[in-house]
Length: 134
Image 1 (cartoon, rainbow, N blue to C red):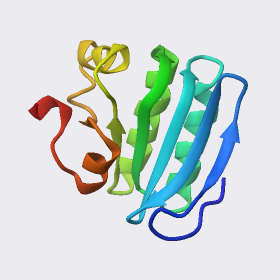
Image 2: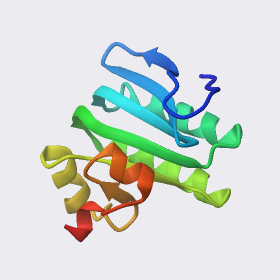
Image 3: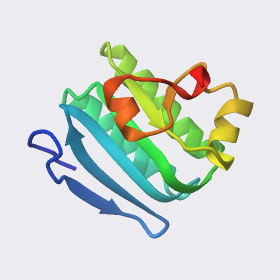
Image 4: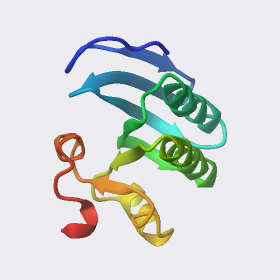
């Protein structure tokens, strides 16, 4: 997944049977828009994409979960692994999640304390109001 360009430039899309990942830049922040299920079958792809981004020097990452319809513990593990890797380089992973089962899962697991979680992509890019602040 090679992403080059500037603000709002179209990026690359990676498709797995149950998940597609659209990667693009917004204000020099790499955004991973996930569509589908983030589970045991698809989490290795997400983990690899986040790790690859960190290895290329992108340490400020946003993972947009607003179109994820299922997230399990292996998916959470992929996100946590991406966060750990980005933090090693002084960066971090911001999540975008709307009200519903995904946000409920992040609350229940205590991951709202691990990740900066935002209700919309614009908020995540601007480091605006977080879900926990609402």
